[in-house]
Image 1 (cartoon, one colour):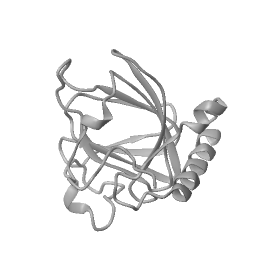
Image 2 (tube, rainbow, N blue to C red):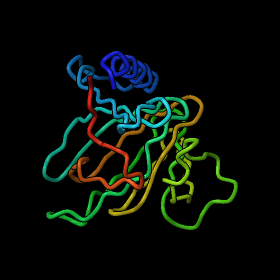
Image 3 (cartoon, helix red, strand yellow):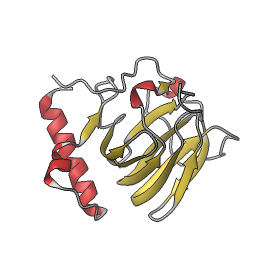
Image 4 (cartoon, rainbow, N blue to C red):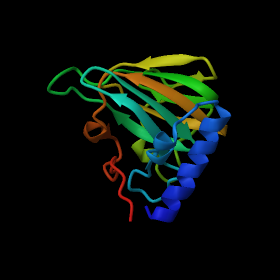
Length: 179
C-alpha cells in the first residue's frame, strides 16, 4: 500500500471513530494502523485499528470498517503460552456482520468479497448493532463485514499476536507494508 492510500484510509477511520464518539489522543490518531492484508484492495478487504493496550494477559483495540469493508476469514491458533486468542467484539457504531464456524445461516445478509468467495467457509451469521457484543473463542474461524454506514467495534481480548493469525486465504499478509 502506498503512503497516500494509507493516509486516506486513516482519515476515513478517524471519521468513523468520531461518529462513534470514540475519543483518541493526537498520539493515538497518528498510530492508527491500516491493514490491507497485502491484497491491494483495502476498501474492499481491509481493516483500520488502534491498539490501546497489549500486555502478556490483555488487549484492547478499536476497529473501524468502512461501508461494506471485510476483515478476511482467519483464526487465532494455539500458542506456546495459551490455547489461542479469545476476543469479544462490542459494536459501537453501525452494524457489523460477523461470521463464525457453525451451521450456515440461510439467506445471510452479507457475502464475501467478489472474486474471493473460495477463501471463506464460516457462514453462521451474528449481527451486532451498537451496544451488542459477541465472544469468539480460540481457534474459531471467523470474518466480519460492515454494513452500509461502516462500523466501529471495540475488541477486548487476551494477548494479541496478530502475526500468528492463520488466514484461509494464503495470499494474505497480516502486517501492513507501506511504500
